[in-house]
Length: 371
Image 1 (tube, rainbow, N blue to C red):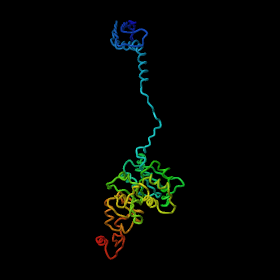
Image 2 (cartoon, rainbow, N blue to C red; image 1 turned 90 degrees about the horizontal axis):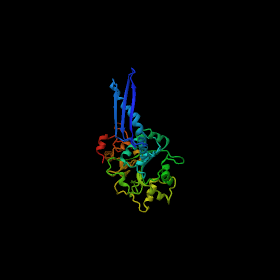
Image 3 (cartoon, rainbow, N blue to C red; image 1 turned 60 degrees about the vertical axis):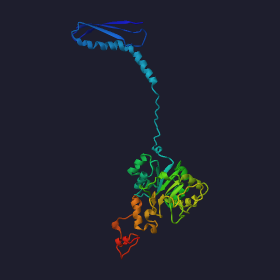
Image 4 (cartoon, rainbow, N blue to C red; image 1 turned 180 degrees about the vertical axis):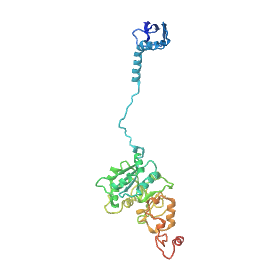
């Protein structure tokens, strides 16, 4: 079962001097076995060796000629067993890395604007910073407005993060006029095709904005069915009007399931507002509740402002007082993004800061006498 190995090797150097080497290798070498054991003794005898450096070569030859052939089967078998014991690895060559999965699919902030306005990019980026981070944004526009928004580097970064989608609706959908947008928002197909799975919808426009100084968050309003602004021209008890509002899509679909809006009738916010009053179990914001948005009824510390036509169509009797405007600007300086404003040096002589030109008094005197 065990064998003893003895080898005789004759070597010559460059001068043809003969070197007789005797190598004795004794150890446990089982016959007909591929296993190599550790207990090996090697004896090397060198005769006629004027150059002792040959002793550095002989052990290497011994390992290459004797040890490795004995151990090679064991090494091969060990590697094979190691490969078989490796854990299985599954590689998905086409993973679904949609960054939109990082956000709550039921919460969407929507802006619809066909005009390529310069204020759209700063407005959208501001809203992204104010709205809670689990909300996603959708911009629906024309070819020009989508291009205007999409070319901004800040918007491209948010697109890469899955935060915002830029969308151009196919035919026959239209968004050019306010009536077109009212038809769009009162059509069940729009919510089924373009807002699937959405429950909370924050509507805002180019003339509305949320204030960073607000003490409340959008998520504080999630238990409401509808929250918006009050309107002097409508039912003053409800605060559901304007382009800045938070809506429950389930309530919208419930209303549209039993009634349809006539074309060229009341705007979609007014149309929904009159029906929310009779909707069972609907929690609708009222005038006396904490303010969500301010339009023509000025209240302190609202969530945001909706100033129609960027301030050109607001109620002059409400906003003509400079103190009211100053207080709103101080609380919500972001209003400068959406308001159609002029520089102070562009003010007309005799302007009394209330939209009137009074030639008999100076601007400073008029401001000091304003109630």
